[in-house]
Image 1 (cartoon, helix red, strand yellow):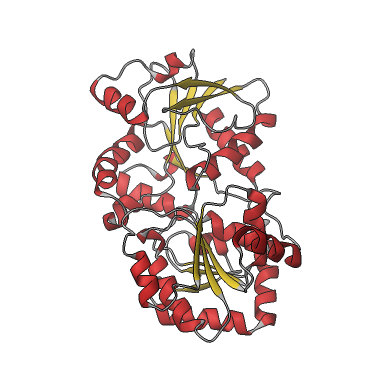
Image 2 (image 1 turned 90 degrees about the horizontal axis):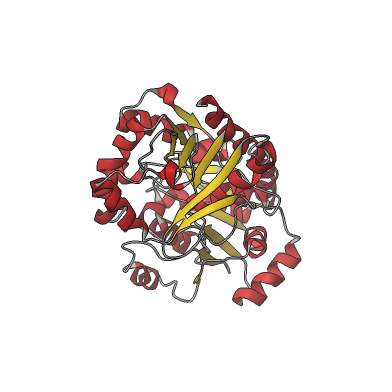
Length: 370
C-alpha cells in the first residue's frame, strides 16, 4: 500500500499539530513493512525536518493560494502529484481532491465551532463552513481524544464509527531532569533564579491565560514564585501586557517565547514547582502530559479533553473560577507531600500514552481502507 501524508505542519517551531504529527510519523517507519509512506508539503518553505527520513514531495506554492485554486478547480488531484498513492492522510484541516486514493482527515479539535470568539474571524468563518463538509467527504476521520470525537460526531454530522481516536503521547525526550541541573539551565537560559509556576502553549484567549494571571496574583502575592509563560503570542492578546501590569506582576511574569530545544523544555518542566493548564478547550492538551512525564505536578481546568489526559493524577478546577485555581495553587505549593504524590501519579499517567501505540493505531486506520 502506498500512503501519502501532509507534513506541512512540521515547521521549525511546531506547535500542537506539528508536535503530534512528527512523532507519529517517526514511530510509524519501522512498522511499514511492504507499505510506503511519502510526505507531501506546500508553502514557501520546505518542512523543517525529514520526519523520520521518509521520502517527500515539496510543492513550493503558497498553501492558501493552492487551497483557493482547489476550491475553484479540483485539479490536479493530490494523489497524482504524489505519483499515485492508495491512501492520502490530510493532517491540516483541509481535504485535497483525489483521483482514486482513499482519504483520511485528522481533526484535532473544533474549538472554532464550539466557541468562535476564541479564534480569528478569518479562521472561524471558512473553517466552520468547510471542516464539517470535509469530515463527511473523507473516508475516515482521526482525532486525538474521545472528547474531540464526540464534538466531531455532534457538529459535523458523521457516524461515530467513522471517527477513530489516536491519542497524543510523550517520548523519551520528556523525562525528569535532575532538579539542580534543571534549575541551573533555567538560570543560564532565562536568568530565572526563583521558584516558578509554568504554563506552556500559545498565549491566546482559548488558553485562558488571563485566569491564570489573576489566580497567580491572588495565590503567590506573598510567595517568591514567578510565572513563566513559554509560548508565542497568539490572536487578540494585545491587552495582555496591560492585565499583567494591572495585577502588579510586571516584574514577576516572564514570557521568553518559544523554546525550540526539547532538552530546554524538559528542563523547564522539571524545574517548575507547578504546571497549570487553564484552557477553555483543548483537543488533547499535550503540554499537561509532558509536564507529568517530567515529574511536575499539574493543575488543569475540568473542560474538554483535559480530564481525559490527566486522569486521576491532576488537580482540576472550573476554567473561569479564579478563586478555585488560586486555592489549588496555594495548596500544592504549600504542601510538599501533596506535590510529591501528584508528581508520582503524573509520571505513571504519562507512561500510559505511547507514540508507538499512536503510530500503530494510525497505520491500522490506513490499512483498514486498503
